[in-house]
Length: 399
Image: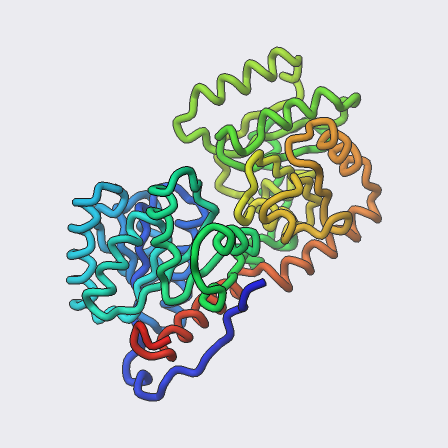
């Protein structure tokens, strides 16, 4: 549907000074797609010799920015108050001038409004990334969201997101670029995970010998579909498996209690494990026989789906959103009707019954599929190509 970014040749005059890119995000506290991508691009900019700055309200991931050799500037970019947005615009304009920033890259709406006005004041290039499909109830909401279409170039993290943008906002398709998220296949690599790491997790999670493992990775929030998976388990007439929910509840204690009550009511306590957050996700995937993505709303991309395939695990997911782009149906995983617990149960049963040879062949296809299409290296190279494209086009407004 949309243009893929292509590497461009920078003007010779720019060879004397490497460009400086300032990424702006609300905060760096939750390791979601926006925050991870910010860190990964900061690392890629540093590796390419470019200047890398990140402005945010800070958070637990701030040290990753600094470890990448980038500079973090703390700024109250999380708030949506118009007065705060205007103040942040002035702060960003001062930062752009002081650091000779060439591109300001906004990854969220509130900081994007500040960044847009700062770019207009200073003549800095402005680009945006849609990390998801924002809610569009009401004209005021759409106007607020529309700042993300004001970039000289606009990046969408999937074709699903790109289609949402084009159907929702007035913008020219020629300015839209699709850059899918990537996984670091040097880390998410079955050959890189030692048996000791897998054994350690098995003990920590109390995984019984001889049982298959169904794993749903994702923070404990309702739309990730934990309840649908629990419903699906009531349709399975077998007891040769356990289910592990891997993810942080992030303060949603009541939702956790709701899930625990559902487990108790359906007599699933001997099957279900709440593992909490995991620091070794590659080993977690290696512990699993089936990876599930049961999100009740379409995932804009779906990192879990890609990571699971990179580790050679069959993935069962609902047939909507980014999953339609990242899973090869019947080859690397199974796609089922969104929200259909009975169909999900049937797909889980089929995945658990895969023979050794079929499982091996699916793993080989999945690993190759990710290596060819969804690597961190490809994502970073494509993003830097967008930066080069914007710079090569001349001053803002000359596109």
